[in-house]
Amino acid sequence: MAEVIIVNSQQDAGEIYAQCVADLIAAKPDCVLGLATGSSPLAAYQQLARKVRDSKLDVSRVRAFALDEYAGLNPEHPQSYRSTISRTVVEPLGLNPDNVHVPNGNLDTIKEAGAEYDAAIAQAGGVDIQILGIGTDGHIGFNEPGSSLASGTRIKTLTEQTRIDNARFFEGDINKVPSHCITQGIGTILRARHLVLLAFGAGKAEAVAETVEGGISAFCPASALQLHPHATVIVDDAAASRLRNRDYYKYAFTNKPAWQKI
Image (cartoon, helix red, strand yellow):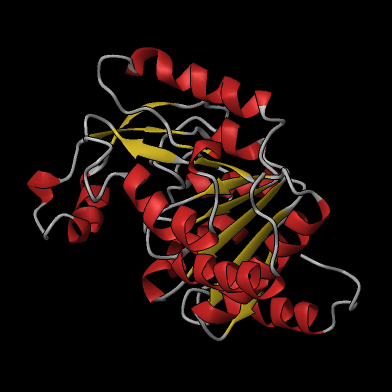
């Protein structure tokens, strides 16, 4: 079962993630980070950028792989995930852009792009820490409900709800949101050595409850985290509101040995 940490704010969650990654970079300068887009990881990236600056961490050898990309969207488009990752992670942290990889959403080559991406991750030695957000329907990456829990990187059709949720990034116009994407599969994600899922707000409460305390099912793709030996779920009180064992999770984290990290 995943470790559940309930925090007061996104900044508190970001601090926990940032310290974990900073410790990893110090111990393994060529580590491999798994990156996600969306609003949930933003505070975490900001806290990590601050730690990199304050601690003068050398990130020149850090490598990274993004979870997903829209299919058919120009990589230079401001809402492409390549652009988003560059803006929110690469530039603030000072990563070498050549070491940061995003799935190739070019429609001319997308048939082979999934297998090539999984091979590139494997060649890099696998992802050390993968940060994740979660959709209101329980999707991680763009693995919508019904996705195989053993899936690799592949093209997927986005649900209408996901396109509605993401329309805010496209001037509120769902017609501007691509209908397909290329995404790491659940099987690919589960191969990362440490998974850190962040969720905030009451709108994520049902998905968080299904992920942590529900049955393992393709109905809620994020529930596959229950199969992982090292998964951490960091949520605020609103997102934790439907967890039956939330009092225990708070007690366990408060009484965690000082030497034991996430």
